[in-house]
Length: 409
Image (cartoon, rainbow, N blue to C red; front, side, top):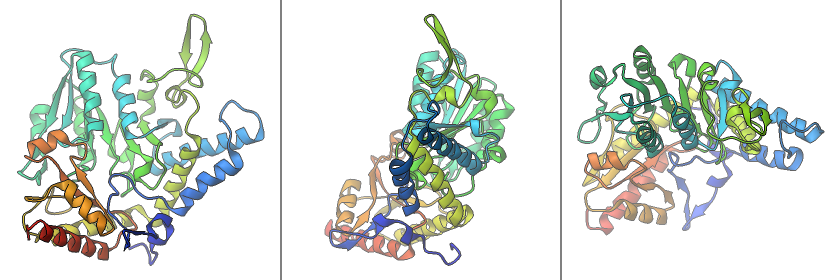
């Protein structure tokens, strides 16, 4: 899949046992592990270049500044942004979406509509709820289809929901619970046709396949570094330059001002206007290294690897008694969510951990979707470049043991 290369050897954390069993890490939708090159980039910065950026004229500061801005250029290339200034460093997807939502606060009013979908993560739902309350705008949702949301988004509903009153259309690229892959280029085009701004939550897709913001036609994109082999605490807000320079900054202070006196201040253009204070220099640099690593593997190869494992897991899990699988039955991203009729999701995670298997159990920050589907939570197995087919077999063996223990087999 990766031209004869086994990426697993690049990830130090995977070479350990949990409860005496080899670690099987299947919680990648929550956070991905880090390759040695990313870890080394962090160590190298702190051992050699650690300094504040932009305002220092000494050697360390200039080296740090060059590396930090080099990372911005690298991320811009990774997503094919037209200008590195369209890349804003944030703490992650959640902050990126909040920056957009609060920045649009002065542009929305009563009678306007914010459109989202029923499958959104709380991070792409709650900020829009707050913006609607603050502005008097109305929040509406594109429904999902099927008892297990196997039909994905109801695209036919766009004909009635996506009207000229819609000013923002916010949607996920890949559902973190359903694994469905939404047609983001189509959704952006439909938004543009009625004059709405498009906002993509790309947290689950950015490191799992090709992603071209210009080909997609996105206005804004949010994603996190830690889900794409980068460090925690660093993320990206992409926005078209023409939009960013007219968006109100979320935070104010040092570094984002062009002029200050006792009566007021003027803001710098993007990206500085959105990066008040000392930025997360080391993690931004390591995020650039993560981009190098993923491109070295090949993002199309990553996508095919993830989809293959997810389809294999779906097929092997589907024969277990009392199981309910969510999301599409055909092509899906690299995750599978499932629930057992007689075993609570938290019990499944606890017992799987005894077998060395790391799963996620709960509502996955999708409480409204879970309630719509009549669930309190599910288990989720999510895959990445270092996972192997035999780990799916280990997952199924573990699930059978759990079902037997609870008398459900």
